[in-house]
Image (cartoon, rainbow, N blue to C red; front, side):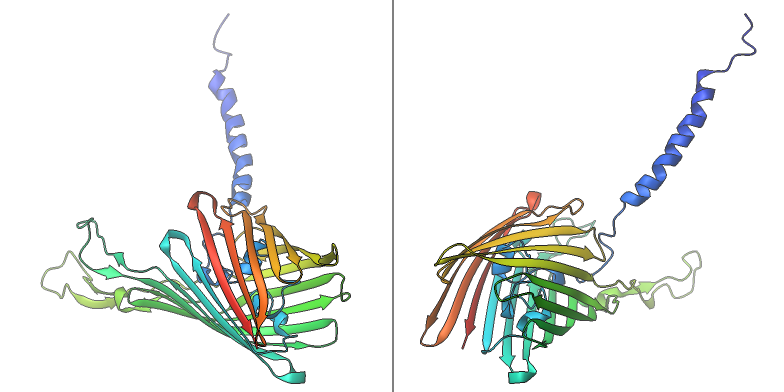
Length: 346
């Protein structure tokens, strides 16, 4: 039998391999996410220990300063002056602090303001030629200042808005941005279903600027006799802020004369990640002691977060209401974070 009319096995397989690879390419493109495409990520760190214990599900039912981060409309029903302070032991020994205050203005609604700070502490400067350090030290710090307003439109519907100025600093270089957040809340009945929605941090793009980006430049390295140390500046690209749309539903449940429970489910649509869902519950005894459990960002691709838990104590002393909350959150291979929030209303 002549081999002239036969075809090598590889010749038949080649078209199949090419087709298989072509079929896989769209799947690979679809699998890509937008993670890492925005700056100002510290704006996504939730400040409330109470809400963190509930899986950071708070857009529908959280009220007062506990809820303004999730939904500016949460401040609408505030009837007292209030202040809250949060400290978090964040990942890699990073320090996170948050303070907020609320001022009721009668029938016009309520105002609130907040300050957020994230600081890495001092880090040794290392280079390729000096991997053990140059002797210099630098810090990375983020600051956000926010001002918001909320008003009760009807006995069931409220709305609010917030403007935030944020700045990121790496050593001597900074980037600044201004964002806007809006939210609404609707209560079906006093003891019934609560609905909430918010759009957070849509605003300007930003790029870094500062003396760390100023360099000397040799325009033509192959030419001798010209100035090889021209003053120049590197330009960084402008990046958007992380816009986040939240939609939530919550329900209070009466379990007994002294025992109640709140349940909430929130859905998230971020501009720089995949969609997810968070679920939280709070068990409240005599409006004094609270125990919380939650699970955050279910269905989020490549997530490292998950189970959350916490507890809180509420009380009053000489007309001043106080609340102390603690929360723990799992971050998978990164470890865990812990938050402590202290609040006052007077």
